[in-house]
Length: 320
Ligand SMILES: [Zn+2]
Image (cartoon, rainbow, N blue to C red; front, side, top):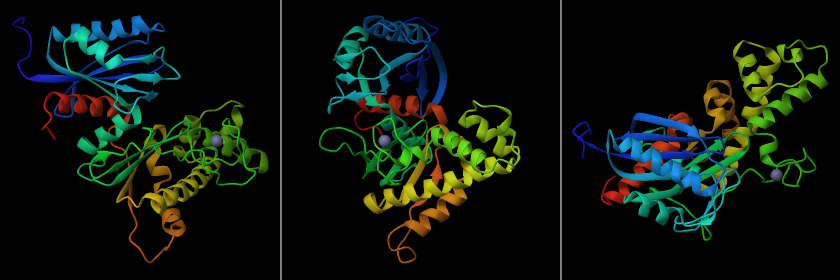
């Protein structure tokens, strides 16, 4: 081992996105170094890039284990990547192959579960054993943590709330149905709601009228600048989010719901409205305890921090 290698062991958490392959050197839940490269499109090159990044980090750190947060379907034992829409791996035993190539323990986990684990160990859900991560971005993802463990169901798929029908004959959804929850409560929905409000109220001024093709981020920026129509869009979003959280609470009875995903950064624009709508919509309103609701605190790093911590548990099963 070269003399420049740091003495304290670390684990490396990877976030493997369709565009960027990100790696974080994690110690005690904190990122102390990071790398990012373009995600290779070829399955073998992707695997080789991970090996090369770890080897590079080993020149500076004593790496004890590696975790990979994967946006896709894994087998129930988290050995095999079955299918990932934005990655080239298909039915590949990534865990065993990487572990062999690196001579290190390797841990695979679904990306939402990785983020949930990060928030549970070091973020907004620290020490809460029964809670739900409700991740709102382009669509809706969710992870249920039950008794401090990730709930996997019978077939290893995450809880699915995005395509519950909340508006019969409502907005069309790419899944083929109409009126799905994520058509009203997602980053995509922010844009659609804004367009509908602009059309329905043609004389109401708004900076969003200045461009045809605006993003959810633009709606967020307009609301922060005090644009009243954009603020009304978030009022609508908060109402839908609260209804969504009441469905989560009715079905699962969690103590806490953490809002993650891309919209978590706009928490202040909708959280009060969402909590009020949750309190109004839950079954038995006024006669039962309400789950707490708050926004995720680790941002886009939650998955890397979480899967690095899971990798550490593979190295030291008693940790945590
Ligand atoms: Zn749908």
